[in-house]
Length: 283
Image (cartoon, rainbow, N blue to C red; front, side):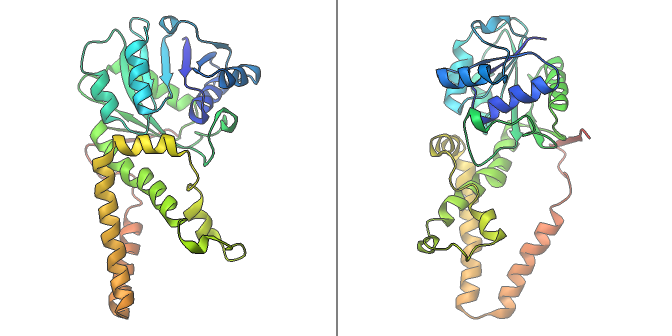
């Protein structure tokens, strides 16, 4: 099986490394020379891609709009599997599935990352025991889906979650994108200055992802705007409820609000209770 990865940032580079660790030969492509040369010189890839039509599987690790443009304008092998790994799925699925393709498309989103970016931040172990979300619809090819499932297992992921693109984008607006937005907003308080010595684990947890690449994340937010706006509004309402109880000195009411949050968190730890979401443990 000939495999290639287009886009050699932290995620694309980690895909290459984890696939090579699993025993596959992997070629890579990036429009910038430095990531290509770094990946080749450091053994992340076995060669650089000159013709995508010779590969059986192509992972596309690019920003949303660049992903659509790349897939639209690249000749792929008849019957190849083309899998994008963007953090939003519905806009990409809609663009790719709007007409017949000579390849099989599978939408993916590895639920792993670091607070740094670039090819130098890629790691072979980045996906170990993480979840891979795979989006499916009525046009998804069963054989292509099985290929991506098997590669996911071999790359070290611990769980596969299968759902529609719509469910993915709604869930990810809450579990990932809102968390990044909150972290970015949190560090804009004036007391961020001269706080050394006053911080502990909670501060580190809140600020770890505040410094991510604004260009990449802004593009993701705008592609999932409706879902994110809904989650921000819900968060503002919850914060206002806590603020009002504090301002009013209402201890019993404040305790009840905090208890509700604790109970909801404790009850959310089950794997899945949604018939529209399939969860498969791999280990």
